[in-house]
Image 1 (cartoon, rainbow, N blue to C red):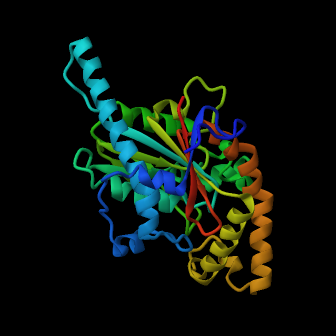
Image 2: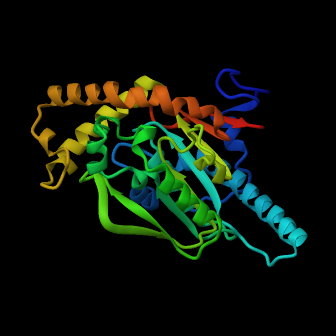
Length: 312
């Protein structure tokens, strides 16, 4: 273990190799099977039992300790105020680029955390549901900026997080469909007083001049990181997989790409990546990495190779 990390990357942080991080698992049990992982992983994001053992389980142990500490502090506050004990959800933010593997990471983490006896109720919400509907983005000329900070209904997102954190019995969140590339009208996801809420999205750690930020409601944050060239390669491969599957659906927003030849499809994917997603990564997403409590650095094979743990 080294005593710090690149000062320009993450201030006052400890840097762990994969082997060093894996040792911090201690006696945390493996609770997932290969069949579980097969259901949780996304199209081109391999996750092995070894990956769970060496990268996820140490993190789940750290999070379990943080959840217990937060509950103890909450009990102290309730005692001081002379009020009945309340247990607001522990909120974990997961940030990172398009195609870096956030969704698979969040689903696997949810499954692992839900198997801890102290917090079995774990829910996952993505920020996609808080994108403005396409009709609004079109009116504002923002369709090519979908995923950028200005494409989200931040007020609605803040109201949702505030309601969840206040302990309301049920809080509704809008639902997004990647097939139709839009918010699903009248469909809602219900968050019902979970022990832990995982909130996953591109710009969840975004700072602004607003009086209240989404990050004000987070208890812990994780940033999934990788080299730009690796993320681009993953994006292109995912595009090709989707072209052969989801894009073939009559309801797919991207159906116009379904018959492209492989060379043209690769060129199209690279152009979308470089003109939209890479710009968003460099301008908005990557600058938030330094705000994360933990950064998981992926290698070209999708496996976590290094972990940064911020101490401040």
